[in-house]
Length: 169
Ligand SMILES: Nc1nc2c(ncn2[C@@H]2O[C@H](COP(=O)(O)OP(=O)(O)OP(=O)(O)O)[C@@H](O)[C@H]2O)c(=O)[nH]1
Ligand SMILES: [Mg+2]
Image 1 (cartoon, rainbow, N blue to C red):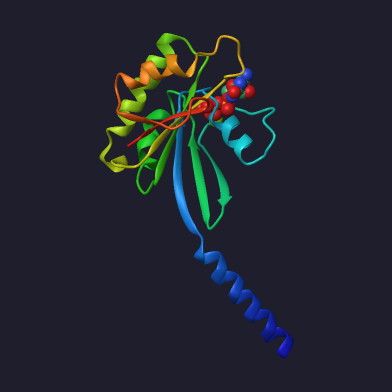
Image 2: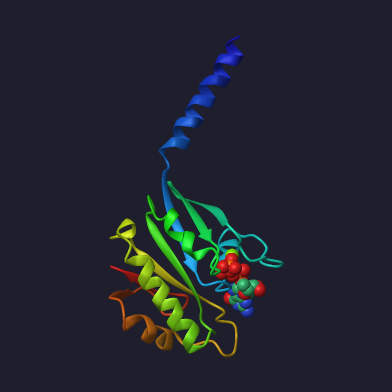
């Protein structure tokens, strides 16, 4: 009996420690094929081979020091995008993924869709980071080229010059 009691105490302490971690919700959006699933798998150390298009959503949990970040990716296809706004409430941040090797029209569409997303009152004031993928491809654009597309329409703070460029202030 004393042994069982000891175990219960240990369980209680472990539970309390678990509860102390702050939990944040980040929404990961971007056009179909922009590389959201691949980027998230890479972030949590999973294999990036044989990744299929996301038909609904895909959640990855990223444990950080004293913090747990749940990143929820929503599929980027035309069929799924109308439902994005159902997931806006309660988010602490937005990760917007773009394909750095896409052509002008696709990038313009990515800008237009991001404008629509961040105009939602449910996302007002939350930070948004743009992540550019496909930088390993020869035809990928430089950070400066991509910046031109986004700087025209948004007020951003520069964070880095490689994979992550701007954060909405
Ligand atoms: N070369 C290269 N290929 C990539 C990169 N990121 C993703 N891909 C490829 O691009 C394709 C689409 O990647 P996904 O991660 O499925 O894209 P997604 O944004 O999750 O797409 P949806 O879920 O359909 O909205 C896959 O074939 C990936 O292997 C990258 O940085 N470089
Ligand atoms: Mg996906």
